[in-house]
Image (cartoon, rainbow, N blue to C red; front, side, top):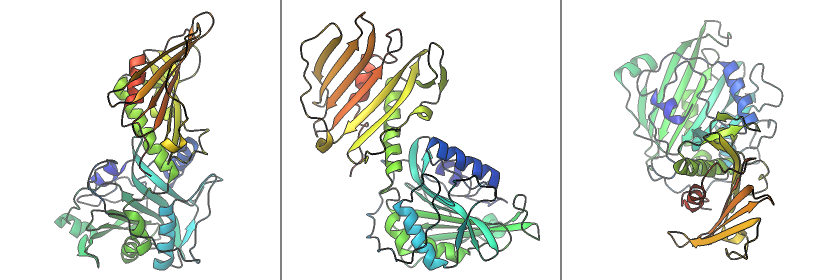
Length: 424
């Protein structure tokens, strides 16, 4: 579930909700397997929240991130799961939690699979486009357990006022923070339909939204497993206002290599779809293919050593009208780009080449290779942009020598200005 869905449902009444731990664990397992931190909206049957836009390159301007304070040497961090790494925003939250709730502990979900982490943080997504940071995990304080979520979306709409119904049913209240922040809090008493821990049969959840004067919004929610959650609404507010969190909130995905790569993925996928609206992903080999979502099969495996600041590489099998082939996109900044001019040498029976200039003055070269029997095997298009960026789009032909995309479509992807690297 994306931030748009998650927060659109909570402008008014906060309905009863409880945690479906089985679904949370299943999503975590699937997320790790696909190497994508998909957004989990906390396993509520219906979850409340606030309207938010989800553009990455547009939307409301965000203030420059404050200088982050140096972490205290006593910062406690949760145990890492298999192949897991914490982001700078994760670490800021851990530092803040140490001040706000020194006795708070991170604990595994009941029945969690071996190798799962106790805290999962990173980019949430709308489709394949990162729309913010989302961190989540089960926590405890003494004998009280709950599920904590902290979200920092990249763009945000107006913070809705408390409606009379929300005041009556959820104790909704709006206050002003020490730095002029708008703070909205609410709580809900929910039937205990999942955890079975509450002796009264009810659980309590607290939610806090903090909107800063620069437009940045931080959302925090604790869903208790009984009527006394391990964090109070006041502690959630203090967590959102903590200097460490405030320092990273304006750019919550900064330093997150995986989120950065996912952002470039989304630009590349969008460019492919612009050039070939009917394109899908393809699975399997041979003459029969199973169509699937274009992004589901897009991968960066093998590119882990690239830093995504100066380089990017992604690839996937794509299909149009039952013709499939492997497409890859390689982007490098000036200081990491291959040397050499994009000119063609003498043609050969197995290699054809053509060079030209794009609409923005880009130099480009198209090279098609064939077997000795004349069957095409691969088409490679290289582009050198005015800023020195080098880009290569490579497409493999199928066994019959047919290409999924036309040369014009492939060149359109290579020349698309949206297919680029984010600023450093």
